Length: 170
Image (spheres, rainbow, N blue to C red):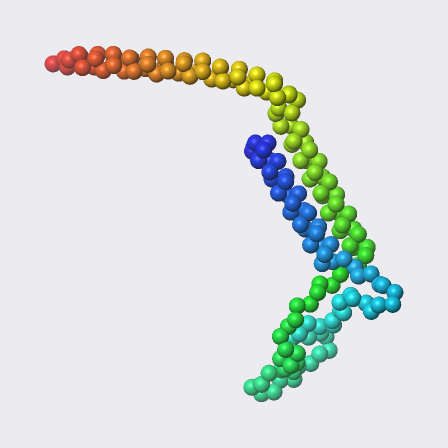
């Protein structure tokens, strides 16, 4: 399991991804409003895309020549980038609600992680005192380690002397 700070960073990344998703969805799929006295700005729905056929369309192909659909696509020129078709108001509201709920859940997860971080219940003086106590404990443990290392070296020297002094029995 990862540590709390990594979990918090992942939660923040997820929150930013949700915010970006919500913004892009809102920007590209919002239903257009009708403004009295102005022409509609909503993109016109096309029956077919360039080069696609629907039921009932026929393609007459001349021998060794392009079909009618291909000729029509060539005459229309390069494909222009068409704006995305907006969602229906009901679908748009439902999707916004779902994304908003996901953001609220993500924010609550972040709250839980933040509240579980150590040190929030102590003031600065208590934290400094705890750090000093930990430093003193670390010095004691380090002194014990140095003593153990010195003892290990002495034991190796003694063992080496015993091995050098031992003779092979014929």
